[in-house]
Image (cartoon, helix red, strand yellow):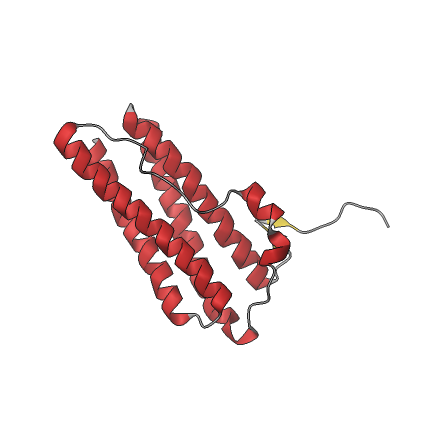
Length: 169
């Protein structure tokens, strides 16, 4: 698959997840939830902008640069350091909406990451570097969404791992 085709397919994924986050901002009443979904929507919009710019650059001069690629979403280590400040209760009446959106978002983020991973395997040159960066960033999105979903669900998991203690009391 050529670079432009890879980016066009990636653009479809990014638009889809951005639209989901934007719709969540519109339906969630909780300020914290709105901020999280708005941050993710903005991040996905930056991906859309980068991909559109890259498609144009590839068409015009056959290369692409990572210079314009940035992310505002912290990695899992930074998330872990700031967990206490993020542990603000989601109002009970909104948990259903929040969990539905987060479940859909997690599915889309995983699908998007898997697409980037498959494209990375067959790519070479500049595009391989760009796809590698997208994989890293999308994994951060998965971590954030999983963190929020685990917290909202009170399911005994934290970032996808069981919250169990190995200490003997």
